[in-house]
Every structure is written in structure tokens, then in C-alpha cells.
Amino acid sequence: MIRTESLKKTYQDGTEALSGITVRLEKRFTSIIGRNGAGKTTFIRILSTQLMPSSGEAYLDGIDLLGNPEKARREIVSIPQESAPIGILTPFELIKMYLVARGFSFKEAHDQAIATLDTLDLREYRDKPSDTLSGGTKRKVFVCMALASNASTVFLDEPTTGLDPLSRLEVWSALKVLQGNVILTTHYMEEAKELSNEVLLIDSGKVIDQGTVDSLLSRFKGLVRAESLVPKPDTMRIGGLYIRYIKYSEAQDYISQGFDIKAITLDDVFIKHGVTLES
Image (cartoon, rainbow, N blue to C red; front, side, top):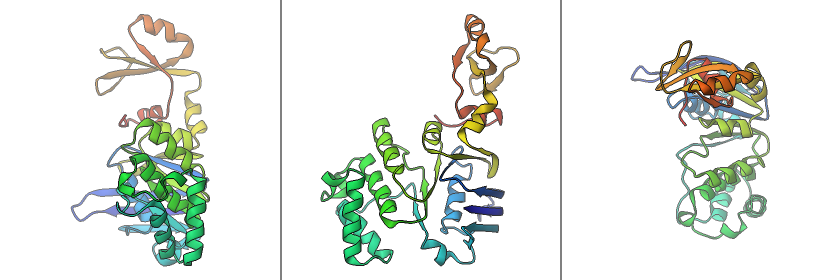
């Protein structure tokens, strides 16, 4: 369980990245979603003991993340978005080296690396230089490191950004094998829905909503989103779109008025809060 109290972060240039976040994260798999610049990466870097906040408190299973980061680091794995494997090393070598650095014996690291590569169907890539692997396979190797470590909490910062749809599905399948609790940042609504037991919505350094996917979407029960490219009465303007939420039974009438009808997604939770996300 992660708990934060009034967590704030202001950078030297005066940018306020976090504006006093108080939250509890208790689910098996939590997605933190928001626009680029919303504060997601700053938040997860603080929780993974890579960055000190300007003020506030943060705890992982009762461990003070700010006062006792060394103890916390034995329980966590963090995979930043910009992570890249050392090109000349093979997945087997990378994982074994990582486990030894975490305190595994050479034999334990050897056996665990092989077993975990098999678990994620990476046996055929085990001895290939990392710079010959696809982007999706490289990301799976990092997931493999996290799985092999047996850490109780895994932090992932936008793990599938830049991947093609098939590679993204491959990484999702790997993430589902991870043990312990997983906390990831993403701005892909489909990813959050596919993986999450709980969703935390952040905008401008503040938590604007939190809940399970079902609880967040239940507010739109029986509704669909009507979109128009031309101004219409009683609509919200989102960029070049004009949006209104209507009953499903009204959809045909709105189609005849020139609206496009879209199913409800997690995007709509943000839209209701006045926030739009990248596609």
C-alpha cells in the first residue's frame, strides 16, 4: 500500500509539478493517467525514491520513502520511460547482471534469468545482442528484469509509448505476469482499462479523480458521446470538436442532425473534468 500526504514538488525554475497530493493506492494494478506535463512522471519518481519532493510525506507498506529510501529500494523496481538496454549485452546477460546488482548470488541470478525469460516467451532472444531486438522485445526484457527481481512493487513510466499496436499487446501480456503490486503511468486510455484495478487521474499536479475503471465509467451509464465538427447548441468545445452527452436512445436523432456517436471511454472522465488527452 502506498500513502502520500500533501506531496508537493516545485522545480528550480518555479514549475510546480505536484500541488499537494494526498492519496492511497491499495490495488494490485494502478494506472496513473494524465496529459504530458500533468505531473505523472514526477509523482512516480518520488514514489520510487529517485526524486525528493519539496514537501510532504510518502510511505510504501509503512516504510518512510523519504526518511528511509534504502530500505524501500529493496522492495521496489522502477523502469523509467527512457530506459534502454546496453546494446552489446544479451537479454540473459542484462537480467543476470541486474539481479547480481540487487544482491542475488551468481547461481541464483543465472537460474532466475533463464526461468523468467522462459516465462515471458523470450527464450529465442536469450543470447541475441539487445540492439538487434525490436522495440517491443526490448521493453519486455525490462519487464523480465522486474519479474525476476521478485520485488513487491514495480513502477513503470509509460512502458508502451512509441510501440506499434502488436508490440503493445506483447508488453501488456508480459505485465500481467508480474508479481506484487504494479503502478504505471500512461496516457493511453485503452492501456489503463486493459490493465488496471484502479485508476488515478492527474492534471496540473493534482489528483482530479480516482477509482476502479467500472466505478469511473458507471457515471456515464446509458450515455454515449455525440460529436460535431460545427458549433451546436448546448455542447462543450474540445479543440475543434463540439461534444454533448446524450442517452443511447437519442443517438439516431443526433445522427440525423450531423453528429457522430462514440462509445464512452476513460477519455470522457477527463473531458467531464475539462481535460483532454493525447490520442
